[in-house]
Length: 72
Image 1 (cartoon, rainbow, N blue to C red):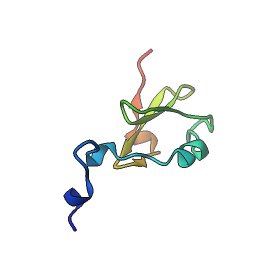
Image 2: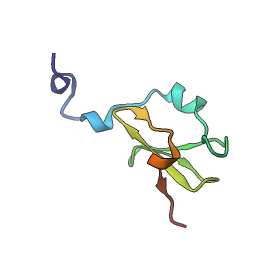
Image 3: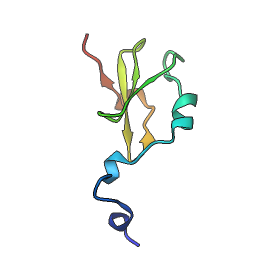
């Protein structure tokens, strides 16, 4: 089975659902503060660090160098 066969039309690979229990456990690696989940952008937001960590293929990428800086 190819990766494409596992995908549904409504949920492409880059939008796979992340386990909510996992999101409850994750904290910002820089500040150790809690994160908020932005389902639309598929990001975990650290307000304290002003960073948005991407979620790719349902996997949170918790590396500061991969995070997007938040504009305030």
